Length: 139
View 1 (tube, rainbow, N blue to C red):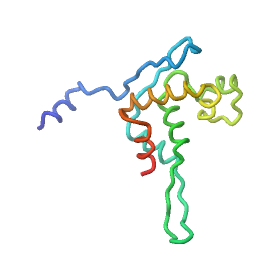
View 2: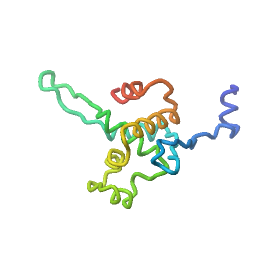
View 3: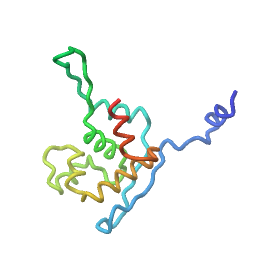
């Protein structure tokens, strides 16, 4: 058995639910909490943002990912606190469509949105740039 396998079996490797706190701005009295997602969760989110069409010229299936929706859903799924799916929060901020992604847009200012997105990328292991995530979503 390899050293890596021993490490994985030892129980020392238990950071699947890693959470970090992030202060988005002075507007929020408390920090937001975000967690890492598993690849299975990420895959489910990515697939929920894809649509398949048929190219009229080549008659081939073409799969496209709505990268804005993917980023929003990734942020919603990674955010532990506040719960963007909360009906009370959505009502408080005037979200009528019941979509957690819509709450992101009305609750956060653009800089706060970016700060939350950066924290979500960091906790999920995306060290470089959000563009890496967008490229992954396209594939």
